Image 1: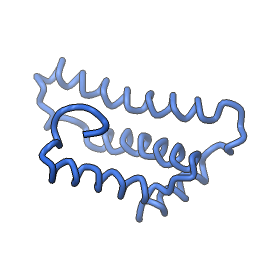
Image 2: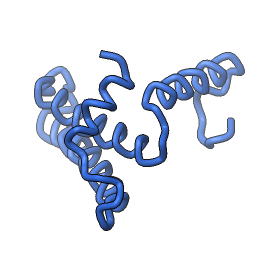
Image 3: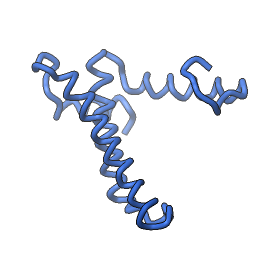
Image 4: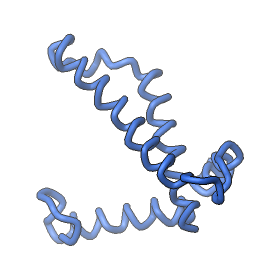
Length: 109
């Protein structure tokens, strides 16, 4: 499955664009799902001596899937094909790596 195909499939379960507060709902959903991943990571640090080999990867796969769903639907909300988003991100990272600024901070490195 390619990114655009995934996006089309995700949209079959998304609310329509004209639903009240849909964008706010999507943004909070994305933050909530990424927060769930962070919370599970925190528990590995706290309870499992930071041994990430003990992460339940089936559970992680489900949570990452939820994050991907929100990203796909948010991208569509702004008429951005998910494949374009992914390609742009890889190109940006490759450019930063080529210029030796992959580390550090700032959006415009």
